[in-house]
Length: 314
Image (cartoon, rainbow, N blue to C red; front, side, top):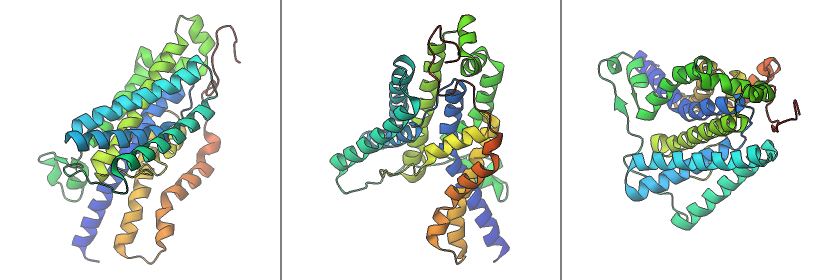
C-alpha cells in the first residue's frame, strides 16, 4: 500500500468518522439534558426518523435545504412536546411512551413514504454539500477531513463546549441537575419541576430531529424508512457512558462514529472479512463498551420517576 493511498485512506476515514458522529452527537447532547432532568426518552430513535423524513420531503418539494432543516426542528419539538405531555403532565410510564413513540414515528414515516413516493427512493441533488474553511483545509491529511464538512457538522461540534457551559455554568443547568436529582428539593426552592422538564424534552426533541435531518440532507441525500439504523439508541448509550457531561458525551459519540467509519474502511482495504461481520461492528462496540463501563454509571436519582408535589421520593 503506497504512502499516498494510506494518507488518502486515513483522511477519508477521519472525514467519515466526523460525519458519522454528527447525528449521534446531536441527539446525544439533547438527551444529556433530558436525562439530567429526570426523563428517559426512548423515543429519540423515532424522533430522528421523523426528522429525517419530514426534512427530506419538504426540502425535495421546496428545493430548499434550510426549510427542510427547520421542518425537522419543528417536528422534533412537536414530538418532544407530545412525550412531555404524556410523561410529565399525565405521568405515563416513560419507557412505554418512548418505545410507543418510536414505533409510531417509524411506522408513520414508512407509510407516508410509500403513499408519497411508492416504491421509488428519489435523490435530493444538492444535499450533502460541504463548506471548506480556507487555509486550515489545506493541512495535509487532516485538513480536508476536518475542515471541509457540512455546516451543521461545525455547528454541532461548536455546541459541545456551549452545552457543557450551559449545564455547569448557568442557572438553567443548575436547575436541570437539581430537578433530576432531587425534584422535591428543587420544588421547595421555588423551581417549577414540570417547566424545567418540559424545556429539557423540547430541547432533546429539537436536536434529535436535526440529527435525523442531517442523515437525510447532510449525509445521504435520500430517505429510507430505516435510515437511523439504531443511532438513537446508540445516542442513549453514549449519554450514559459520558455520564451526562457534554464533553465526555462528545468523546463517546466519536468512538461510535469511528466504529461506523471503520465498516467502510475495511471494505475499501479489501480485507477478507465477512461483510455481515463488518456491518455489525458498530453494534459490537456498543455491547463491549456497555460490558466494560456500565457498572461505573450512576444514574440521576429521579430518572424515570414521575414527580408529583407532596410525594417525596416516590
